[in-house]
Amino acid sequence: MDDEAMTGRDRGSHGAQPNGRPGRRLADEVHDTLLRQLMSSRFMPDSRVTIDALARELGVSQTPIRDALNRMEADGLVVRVPHAGYRIPPLISRERFDDMLEIRLLLEPAAARHAAERATTSQVSHLRRLLEEMAGLEEGDGPTAYGAFGLRDAAFHDLVAQSAGNQLVREALARLHTHVHLFRLVYDTQVTYLAMGEHDEILAGIAARDPDQAAYAMRQHILLSGDRFRRLFDDTRLGDAR
Image 1 (cartoon, rainbow, N blue to C red):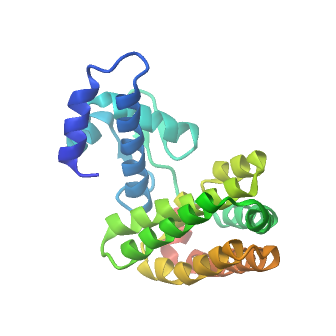
Image 2 (cartoon, one colour):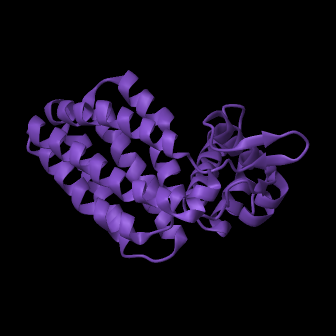
């Protein structure tokens, strides 16, 4: 979302009715923009973030910035500092990473299995579109593309969980904010390249209505992703961040 587009929508949102749908859409876009920046190392761990500065940078009023930051605070992605705006939290610890991986291994292969059994044709098509968008971003360069890839990576996994038909599982996975935390660990386009083939295998199993293939592909993806990120904890930078 470019600054000019946001500014225009923001001007239009001031006259919105109490249901606030135009403003709500803007807040969602600002929220996604901030998540992209968070995942692409635009915000450093423990750095301060102020509403005024973000409003000026993005060319919007303070209202959508405040709404987006409130949502991120509720999700544990930023920390409110009294009379000083917000603070970016530290990177996840090795212990948190291992716990998160264990939960994913318990829930996501089962979700992929059920998605192969229950996904609608529309959901399969949506999964395919997400992978096509991710492939286009993978060819891009820079932190912006990396953060946008992370958002679609999260959307892909969320849609698999939604297609499985168990809302509690979907909500449990969403609360982990796995992709935000992992993509914050390092800016490395190799992460996106390796994930693409693994996503293709997951979708192939779901599209073929093969529960075993879908579950196996998801489990392998989580394990391989875990190995890629686990090595980062041996890096001095991450050791210091803990």
